[in-house]
Length: 341
Image 1: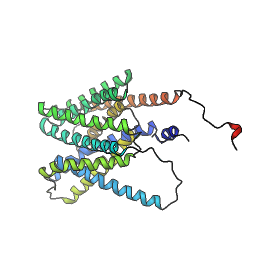
Image 2: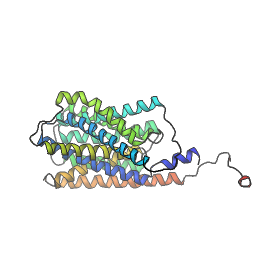
Image 3: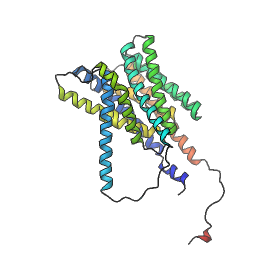
Image 4: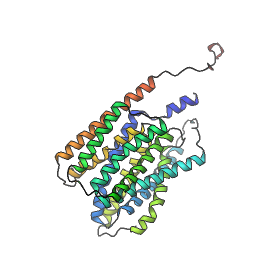
């Protein structure tokens, strides 16, 4: 098998990548509810929570990797062809940039929510993300959305606006908006880096996630120490269980799936599909936290789901058209049939 065909075989199918992204978005949506319960049960702040997310997620991924290593050594496996190696300097730079981008995304978002409120902070951060990613993908990778993609992004932004602002709104403060734009920039950088280098780095998404979590934990640790790293609580068991959930599901699992899917799917498509996160959060708020179901919640949810469905369908069509595109033949270097033995 040639090097080109080996690389093609290693690429995750688009359908599975889209499923990974949807599951990651739903898992991310549960983080807000878990954080809300943590804030009620303890004095833990958002910066300390970000640190424990990364540190706990890193420990879980390391434990999982060790378990996989023991399982692999316990059975005989056929030898695998080596993947193309990534230069050490470029790999270190890519991982460091991803970790810093995650830290900026999380910390600036929490700060924006504190300054200008949840609704405005969410709308600006998640609304600016797809726009920045679409522009970045067009300028750096030549990716085009097309008419259907532009319509889907527009519909998704409209749904997000209705979902987050229709039920109450918030106070718009310039400092909070600036922090939300900084958060969106960090998210866009992570998505573009994953898309640009994910399929050619030779580094598995699990290793990328582990290193990114390590960098994120180091970046958030000083801020968490200043805020108060250890929570004070009268219900330590509940707090530990909630922290374990946040580290396991919306962090270790969700980010591993996100990095795997984002390496395959076009960057702008990733950004719109991940808007399913506020849909998941809204459903949880109504079902588990006894928040009132409003017309704005229903309308925004429907618009977002339609946009995500439409863009996923367009992505599948794009992938199918790429597979059907004939490859221009090069010199025939194959062994003649008469020479085979």
